[in-house]
Length: 258
Length: 268
Image (cartoon, rainbow over all chains, first blue to last red; front, top):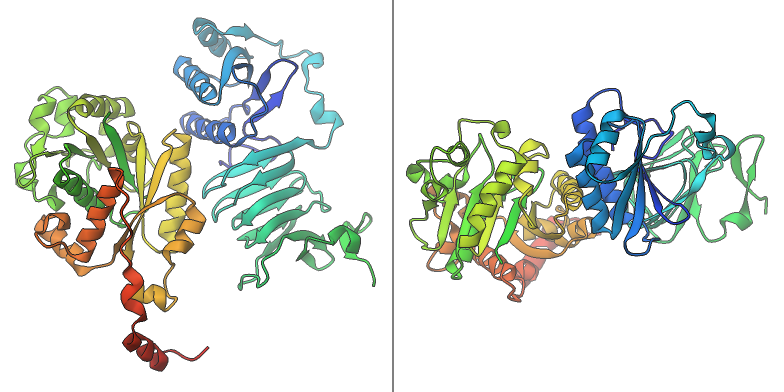
């Protein structure tokens, strides 16, 4: 949703399952523009909560990982309210900021303050795994919305013109792609974009960009976009893996000779 | 339970205020008590379209500042009994009011009316945020143009993020002859992108402009014109009636038109 404040490294808002609770990660706070940032974060959060797969039971507890974000009482209660709309309950707040901790404690949530320097608290995932678990969303990605995920993104719904899906891994869209899809955003040229109907504004895979053909495709069937020697190509999705292979050295997909 | 409906579009000039004036008047004509709220601070127009400009004494800002009571600021419509207008201030900007103040005013207004209809300013900034804050339902007005549909799509996303979930679509300024000739997006094309329920299709018609300039909403005519009828049907659908859509394309496929197209269009 805001390209300036966040790098491609992190998803704007993330939900993860823990043993008994749901973890809600907020992105680290940007250096500038704190007011607009909250509004965008808030919209992101709402979209994410409503679009995401309901993997939780009713009234599951949520641990908010606020990182270095400043949150005041109204903002915390807005987050709690948004969570309660999807049957989740905010129970604890983890923050490295004193003001946020005070606000959370006043509002009656348990507060965890991690010591910022402890190496044991570093997220393991970032170092040992290239991708995070796939993200599954059920929503229409409307104009102005941007889905970012550092893994493979699965979307059940359309991507409208002006909307975009950006993922470190593959992008699979069970619906129409009319906006922008960017797979393998960290440079993985093996990443592919699959969808039921390809009418994109633009396709991007790793560092390769392609514009859609001006005329819409005649036969409406599931298609797959991949990087070939001449750039991004689109082909019928059905037999792709039987007819194509990924050449690691050249970082392209090539068709088997028949 | 009072229904609080915001009429919005994202893009400017697609007919939000015209729709508000006509839907409000139609709802009142159907026997409802209706309050129209002009949320377009600094660029207020709704009073003009209703022909109530010269009756505005106080505005919403005066109510917020405590300079008058809420009832004093409400302008009663000169034709319909159940219709009142809360005018916006013309001299101030969009920042003159906060979300909470807007919510507060509408909450105070709501108990006395069946419908509160809010006319939203164009854009998605402060004025938009204020206007949608109190609403529980929304009507999206769009025209069959790519830019209008794109903005409508954005606005639907923002409304959903703000927990306004009951969103219906009004397609304004439809030109059946252009759709027939494939020069304009059809209503189906728009629905395919926006994917929200349709509640009204309004044809493009010069009488809409005439009525706006006169300050006489079309739905109040003795004998309803086509756009007047479609607005009236729209209002009936809001109240829960099932009304069939007027078939605007009906006149398009006559023999005469077919022959005319035969001559004017290159054969395919």
